[in-house]
Length: 423
Image (cartoon, rainbow, N blue to C red; front, side, top):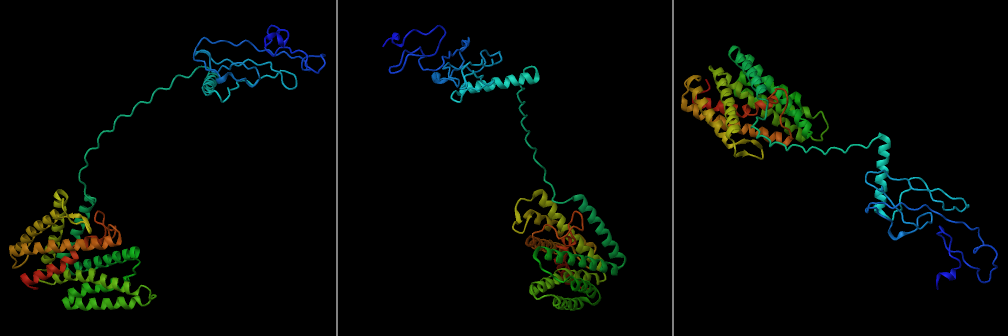
């Protein structure tokens, strides 16, 4: 079928369907569809000079029924996007409708949609600032971090505070020891009471064990005085009475936890005041002040030697499960320092003492002081604490200073009795 079968050719500029002839079975009056003849027109499309203009796939008809190809994005790279021309397509009411300004392309054309959005953003930025924004400067790459310098070995405590407190305590002890012996007995009693208070407080905080402090404090002070006045027999009697007082005192409270409370009380009475009583027993001799001074010096020197050598050369752990900071090298340092100090003290401070006795005394002090330190470390590890208290800056609490002194006191007292008598 040729084009003449459709009737006369369409008028110039008319893009719609040709005028149809009379339909079979209908009168010829009126237009072909018995509807008013509306001529659809559209402006001529502008052909861009660039080749990167993307068109809608499939040349689908646009939303206004023109059937023309859609153009999107700016025509040139340095031009602003042109606003679309309004279409004269008729609306259902018969009047031409104007498309909305800046209508975005349909979703079928992804590339056109991205170009349209970019043009819109650039147009809005230019209107807001009056001029295109300069491109952002690229971020300056960060300089590579310098390798960390190897850190020096540091002590676990404040060394200056520890030395200052140690010097102060030493001055009080020496002044009371060589001026009036009874004053030194009072110093021992005060240290015992404070140590009992720290121990019972930590037991109650960490283990809910309520060891009665009142009978322990009174009995502990009486134990030290009895040892100085009545000797070993007086110390044993005071220890028995203190244990009995703990049993009776705890009966005033509910029976729940009675066994663990009184057991902890008897342990505390033996561990702190009873062992401290041997210092008072050493003081009763004619050269008692020199014996107590030797005992204190050897214990301090042993701890200092272990600390210095272990901090500088320590590599092999002594008891990692109990006290990870102690090393075998530190133990050798403690033994060496204590033996040298023992030989000097026995030779020049103790009546009828000899240097070889001092070597044995120093060896025994190093062993007992280390065991005492490990013993309290075991207690603190079980309680989950680092220090028994905070009374002494750089040292912790009183019990943290008595840990190596308490078990060493009976050892030194016994060796003095063996070597030079109780005199």
